Length: 355
Ligand SMILES: Nc1ncnc2c1ncn2[C@@H]1O[C@H](COP(=O)(O)OP(=O)(O)OP(=O)(O)O)[C@@H](O)[C@H]1O
Image 1 (spheres, rainbow, N blue to C red):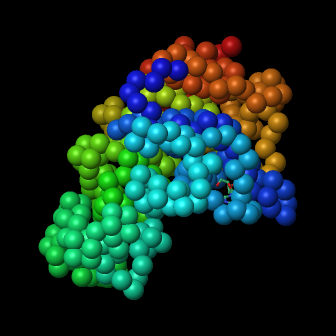
Image 2 (image 1 turned 180 degrees about the vertical axis):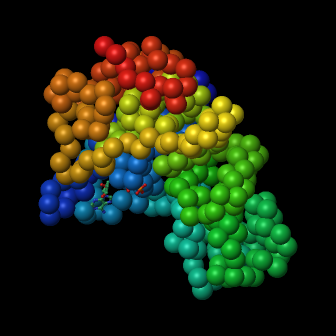
Image 3 (image 1 turned 30 degrees about the horizontal axis):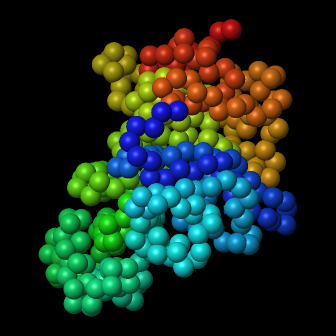
């Protein structure tokens, strides 16, 4: 695969397992991807596909036990020095977490402390990681609140999280995450809990801040609409494995994995004039079935039980992740056939591929 631009983070063959009473849950099973400097990589997949466990593994926030990094490496390029985050000491990891890699979550209240004002919380992070005194840190906090578009930042800095709306709290969390100028921001479903107009504002803000700061973003989402808005490249996960990876435009135009095709077909789109004239309503094609039980993954392709293109061979062994050209990768033995039905995802998924 060609890497244009410098690689900031390379996850190679990562395996994160949980040892439970019922057996070993292979939440992340041999995941490989990389993020270049300044780019946004989206990791997409249904609930349970292993997205959050992947991001928590990068942050080394997996509870151990029951969790375990059972294999692979997470190479992070910190100011020219490559470090394997699965191996660095806890003290070094704490320093990386505050300074080089920040994370924002779906629910700001899980990261914000209800008993401190938002200004104090950002200032605290700045003091801890940048060695500034309380007064200087509060100035940085106010500047950051302004930076993320909070009106009257001097006044709002003295408010508590509960005095703010969900959208404002999400802005505060972004301000806190960016206050130390991270090289990588991990955003785990940061807008899912917000209503759509606020969601659009937050996505817009993140894009703008990224342009100004030049950081890389790892954007975790189950929403391909958000992927199209935000990302340069996308990794599609299913059952703890990468099933497709590539440039966003390329994957939207010509997906090579039936799971990606199903996800794409579940995005609502405006009706065409002809459809409106025929009073046709939009029909979204849901992917039948559910994500597999991670304790009991099928021996072959994990998507096979839900796949309308499945062949007997798909049940035999896990298909390899193959390069389909231009760094686009797919884990499907039939990817070559899907090339023939290129031309937009909606057309693709409503056509049966003929052998
Ligand atoms: N502490 C844990 N103990 C046991 N299993 C776990 C633990 N944490 C996660 N898992 C399992 O790992 C799998 C992947 O979970 P993960 O949270 O990464 O999925 P996800 O794709 O992020 O889903 P969501 O969108 O719902 O967050 C799931 O089957 C989950 O049950």
